[in-house]
Amino acid sequence: MESTDLLMTVLSMAAVRLPVLIALTIGVVWVMDVPRGPVRTGALAGLLLLAATSMFGLLASLLPLWLINSGQYGSIAGLGMILNGVHFALSLVEAFGLVLVVWALTRALRGGVPRPA
Image 1 (cartoon, helix red, strand yellow):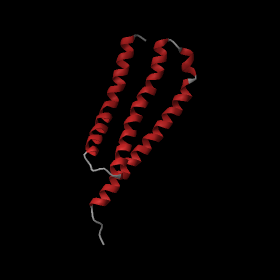
Image 2 (cartoon, helix red, strand yellow):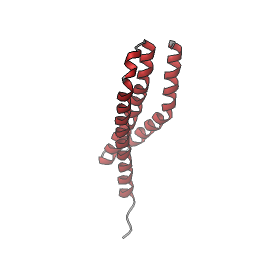
Image 3 (cartoon, rainbow, N blue to C red):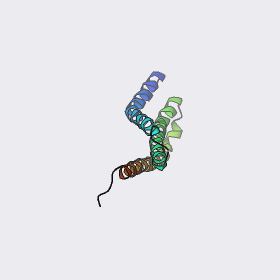
Image 4 (tube, helix red, strand yellow):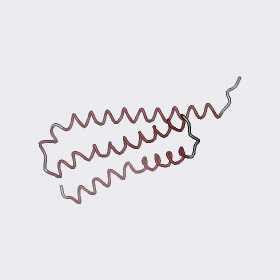
């Protein structure tokens, strides 16, 4: 694999994640405008967890490509199970981040809308 092929693969993988990262950045900017409190903290934590898992997922996906490019074919054989575990852990963290965002949204909506008697 030539360096230009590797660069194009890296750029295309980053471009696939770019819309989600832009949306998460917009979410963080919107949440930063909210007064401090547990809802804001939960929303920020959830959004940052989602962004971090997206970035770490990108790095984990690039690791096999980097090993192939550097010629370390023997390392790739045992990497499959490890990467499956890493992606599973990242999906658990991503699910927790999503739960935090939904919790913050639910808590904010319940506080802003009076309940019927």
